[in-house]
Length: 209
Image (tube, rainbow, N blue to C red; front, side, top):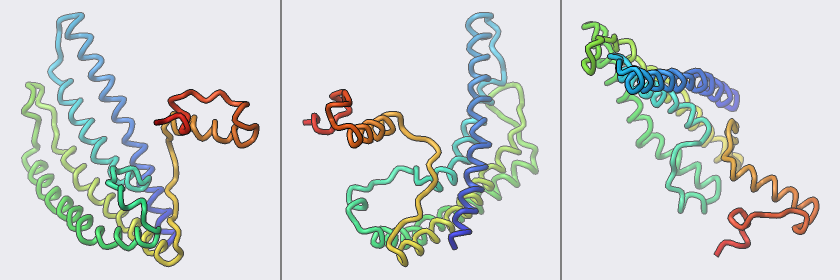
C-alpha cells in the first residue's frame, strides 16, 4: 500500500512538473503578442488560442500533482482540530461519496467530448488561424485518469492513517517564502535565544494583536 502511494506520487509529480512548462509557452506567446500588437501594430491571429490552450492544459494536468502534495484548498476550521484517525475516516467516506463519482464522470464525459472533437478534426473558432484543438480535448481524459490514480493513493493514505494514527506526509516541493523565513528565525531563536535574532514585527507571533 505504501509502495503504491509512493508510485502514484511520483507519477503525479512527473506529469505536474512536465506540464508546468506550459506556463513558459503561454508567457512567451502572450509577451510576443503584446510586443507586436502595441509596438509594431501587427497583432497575431494565434496568441489568444495559445494562451487559453496552455492555461487550460496546465490547470487540468496540475490537479493530480496538487492532490499528491495536499495543496488543494480545504475548509479545515473543524478538520484541523480532529485526531488524524478521525480526519482519515471522514476523508475516506468523502472520497467515495464525491471524489470518485466526479472523477469518473469527468473521464467518461471527457472521452465522448474528445472523441467527437477528433472525429471532426475540430479547430478553434476564436481566431481566423484555425488552430487544431482536438488533441487538447484529450487532456480532459488524461487529467481524469491521473486524478483517479492519485485518488486511489489518497484512499490508501487514509487506510494507513486509520491503522497507524499518523498520516504519510506528502513530499514538499515548494514553500512559501514567509513560512520558510519564520521557520529559520524560530530555529535561530532556539539555538541562540530571542536577543540574537531581530524578528520583524510582521513576522513575530508575539507581537500580533
